[in-house]
Image 1: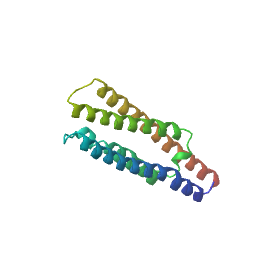
Image 2 (image 1 turned 90 degrees about the vertical axis):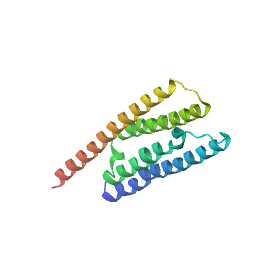
Image 3 (image 1 turned 60 degrees about the vertical axis):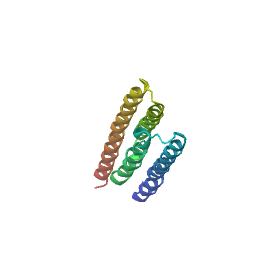
Image 4 (image 1 turned 135 degrees about the vertical axis):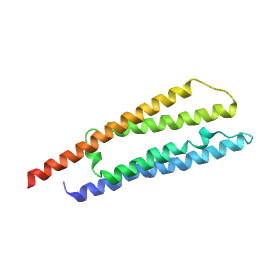
Length: 149
């Protein structure tokens, strides 16, 4: 495999994920504003800031991965980390939306704590597995360089 192959895959796979997270961030902002229209002027910080999970955790996280380790997606562990991390970000976003609805309604629920615990747990587990895939990618690259010298 040549470096040009890695760069092509890098721009297609990881940047596509960044673009999807940017679109989802804008969608979260729009949903917040539409919900505020029907909330009779009552807003919730949880709902207003739910886009940050998508923007910072999703788009920025994968952009940094694309910048630091372009071939990380080639690791056999990448898909597991990708799925865990994305599931964690989704759980945090949905939990924030749910908490926002409850705040606007003026009630509370124990489920919001579960969303936070599960979301942060899956995000952390996915992050660790993604780090393992980056290390795995770099160690394979170094092994291949050692064989050609």
